[in-house]
Length: 170
Ligand SMILES: Cc1cc2nc3c(=O)[nH]c(=O)nc-3n(C[C@H](O)[C@H](O)[C@H](O)COP(=O)(O)O)c2cc1C
Image (cartoon, rainbow, N blue to C red; front, side):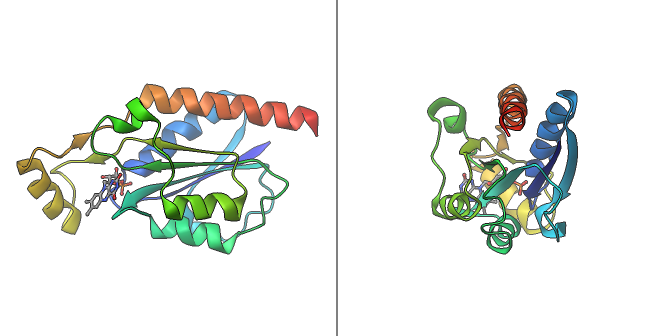
């Protein structure tokens, strides 16, 4: 059983979330390939997919969006889970936020079973234009790391259990 964990990231925090998910799937005995969504050129050979994206301006990261377009319909017979990462507060943990429009479109293209939203991270250490925005947001009190590794890892363990169940049923 090989699972592809792919992600779209600009500042690296969604890549790190994908890494935590990959660790849990590996610990559950699954083979895992962890790749930037833009670096995936073939999806044959995977039994399941987890695709995650950071959110910018109410959209989904372009790499994940393009992935969903490129491989639309290719996962009809394989389970798919999506996650978004973004909110710079605790709403993702408190309220179970729905997918934004672009994530919803990706859900349809990839026939995903589920979508979940995790908190994001934006800190003043960010580089380039992101660092510029982050430092301004920090001054306004809107920066920080709102990711919740325990929640993310628990979700990944549920995904691993569902993959095992799906495999037993086929
Ligand atoms: C310019 C800008 C716009 C953003 N827009 C959103 C948004 O619309 N919704 C949201 O939840 N988070 C938004 N965020 C927060 C990012 O999604 C968050 O920092 C995320 O963790 C970044 O992930 P990455 O490091 O993988 O790129 C925005 C951040 C920046 C800098």
